[in-house]
Image (cartoon, rainbow, N blue to C red; front, side):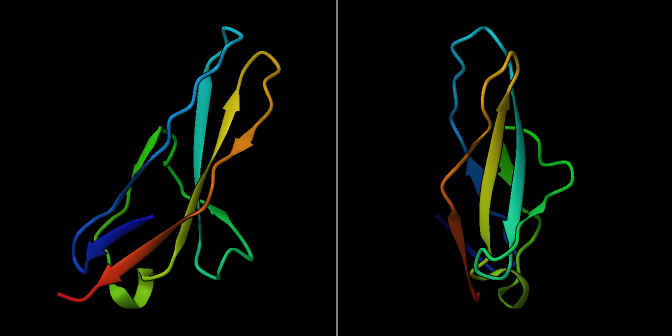
Length: 89
């Protein structure tokens, strides 16, 4: 989980390893409806994702996760969900 003050950014990081000699790729996703639906975040394809400037109205309680994919036949793995808390200044 992460917490930030309105107007700041928040960062999420995942650690993953692959043992079969392949390479990993990442796709961060966001849900603003309690996890009912998830949308890929365009351009969020590294092990760390940093949000833009946050607002309480738009970003408080949003949830984030990352899908990690591996080459050479590795199964995709989806991370645990992290919830963002945004506080007013």
